[in-house]
Image (tube, rainbow, N blue to C red; front, side):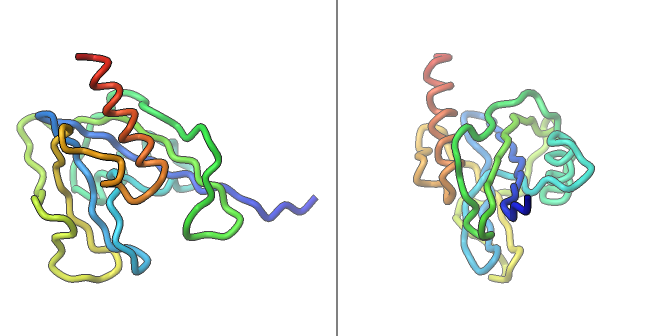
Amino acid sequence: MGNSNCFNIRVYGICIRNHQLLVSDEYVLDMYMTKFPGGGLEYGEGPIECLKRECREEMELEVDITDHFYTTDFFQSTRFFKDTQLISIYYRFELPDNLCIRASKEKFNFEKEINGSQSFRWIPISELTPEEMTFPIDRKVVELIKKNIQDNV
């Protein structure tokens, strides 16, 4: 029963501070992308461990994971791998108190355009649209964030 289909599990963080959402602008696989901070689950780690590791690697910070926000509930194939289904898990997280992350006001504010380049940016929730994000699941999560904020007003 040889099934060559596989799964790619990604774990991302939602950080909202002062009514702004933290996003990651990246140049990876020769492509510009705006997404949530986070990345791929590695064998042997749980999703929360993955997000904490990704934040250490990307932002050089220890973050506090507060709660689960969303897990993909529809089929999404990966853009980069044939016959692979993408499953994304999103958690809310908080930065350490009074800590500022180096962020830009400009999109893709890299020193050099090389694979792996990354910069962070805060987007006011009032200006946030799904189209700001590159990938379909992230766009759905932006819609959920906006709805969640409206429902809690």
